[in-house]
Length: 459
Image 1 (cartoon, rainbow, N blue to C red):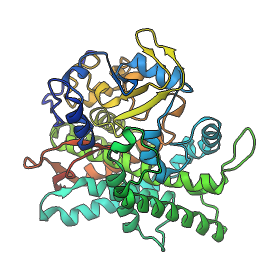
Image 2 (cartoon, helix red, strand yellow):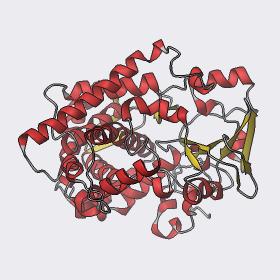
Image 3 (tube, rainbow, N blue to C red):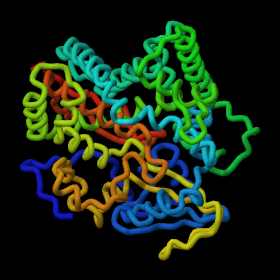
Image 4 (cartoon, helix red, strand yellow):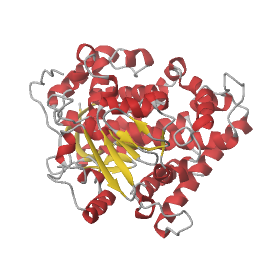
């Protein structure tokens, strides 16, 4: 756990936790506004916290041994909650992120070959093309003042998804409309719903969710359009959509149904582009405030890539880029909290969990826990160097989840993020914006309130 410090360590901004637990009413209101404001400072220092409420216990886990128990040792006991499904289910249906049991296992087996490393390496030109287009856009805007790099990274990663999943822009839907639809869904459906928190039945009207439901239907229709266009063309492409269409369960030979194809295409549109965009957003914020780190990235990018587009071999040869991305996801994990519900009683040794209890994996807190990390508040990519990373327990760092349900697109995300980051730092210099306060907020994903405006200069 011994961290050697950067010469000029940067302590990034985040939410200041309350000194004491909030009362019930205030806590519920803050949970809706921003869950990070609810978790008291003691949760960053103590190993466990449990709260008894409405007949069940809410277990707040942030220790590696508890994460291992929930996600690796007993995944069939700790299942996804109905609350979580109500957040993402309207858009993602019964795809890989939301399905359970045998249905999930079948889809995972069928889709896994599409995410083999040899298949992903073939997508490197799409990553590079998107990155170069992003550089051109940002150079054109650089003289006009701060640039919202969050919006630019969302554009960049959606470019990749549109090309590799949708096979190009949907003429019936359009790139801008897809981007707006994803944002509408996250902003509308991403807030905890009081009715859902209290287990209110689905038939009770929720008039405030109309915009989100319309966004979900729009995403589904865009996915259906892409699938139908590809089938009608008779074209065989080695992109993710082509691989999903050709996917077969190695045990049964069965392919994905139309509904499963649609739900997984929407999953990759939404989850795939949003999480990588946020990782890049926070990475740029961090290196803008740590010029020594940005300079090391620049040297590595030039040494490995020169002035050539980033290819798959180059991605593999830039370990410091991966360290920066990993450290950004430690400080700002795209998925900050994962909830599960116990399907039966289970003894975890130091914690007794009853059937129906909630288990909250507080990834954000674990990644900043004072007993797990030395100087956890500091931006220090070298904690993920090859030598020092060996000392990090497997379940202490979980930006992609863990266990059998670990994110299927993890390697895709790393490759895409490294390619885009290397292209950006080679062409652009990122500078801090002292006038902007960075406040992360949980809206399904962990995103900065009010975007991320930074000053940008062409090199």
